[in-house]
Image 1 (cartoon, helix red, strand yellow):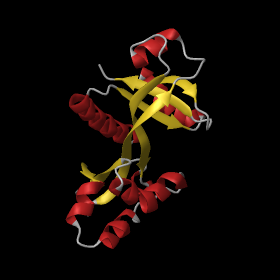
Image 2 (spheres, helix red, strand yellow):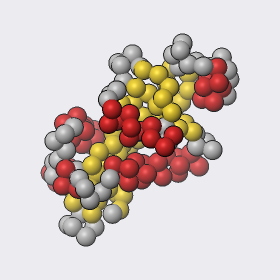
Image 3 (cartoon, one colour):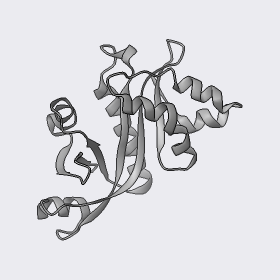
Image 4 (tube, one colour):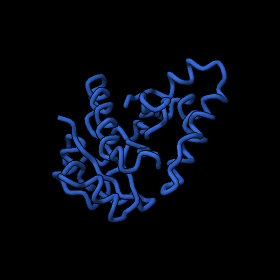
Length: 180
């Protein structure tokens, strides 16, 4: 497996429709939102510098897309229910009410690779890129926003990897991890 940036694909292609066609080969029926993002929004977000998408590809299998992750920088307001300790950890100030973070905006695995590649492996690749961003920018918080369901709660919060902070105005759970 290798991680390839979508921006490098766009830059190296003489015909953007070929990139769209390649992205259309990705299938994730269980989560149509992540499939739709890659098929129709990722290129535009890349061009507008709203986010950066990275493809995890199978070099041994005709560069099939195993999965992908999308990263963005986003400010997050801290809800009233957050403790002073959490505020201190997130902002450096126990009375802080906003913090900037690297957002793992999309994370997905292709249906073809279920049972072959775990979502955790793709998450670890995303976290590796987040650590590179930290080294370049000093931004140390990484966040994920996700639906409040048993599978996703277990996936993101298992082993103490991410810590739940709050539910956002759109009722998505917001969890974070700090790079030290």
